[in-house]
Length: 263
Image (cartoon, rainbow, N blue to C red; front, side, top):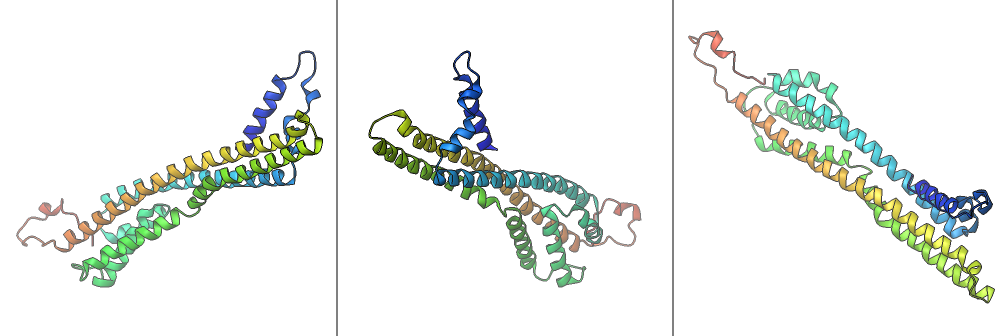
């Protein structure tokens, strides 16, 4: 995408520079001219940068869509959790909110709680519940950040790959100058064009990768904070419900309507 934009700009510049009265086609297509003048090394660099650009844009669009779905399902899951009064009810409905990372945290804490108490009373090992929440959060974040590190790799390496094409183009330009025996534009133009196109391509590939990586990592930090907050909220709800002491039998049943139970 970024390389295509560069080629379109070069084509527009070529058309604008055409002398009056002569068709722009007489100067040839800018894209075809660059590819024709490029040697095998520069052409390979451009193909590699194009593949890196395509891959980075694929990761960016895929992750932004996945994170948007996870954010939407997390909001729905939190509303269902705070509305429901029993862990069993939430566990039964958790699968429909599966894109949310909060579901993994809930499932891990709920399973650990049932292993300790069989669903009744205070947990025997509260630290175990905290560890289960931390493990679930870590696993969910690891899954969500898969492929994102490739954006950082592309952002860091693309300019250097373009620089390699630049250096090679300069070497080729000086070689052509020495072969021609005269400092003419025709002798150095092919190498200079290779140098310029590979440099610009490397920068244009790196910029979207940097922006996408920063935006996605920012969203990952937000998901991590939300999972930590939800884990503490769930642990507090379990402990409060387990420590709940029913009122005396003489208390009218209507007085219990506002009590929340999670068992």
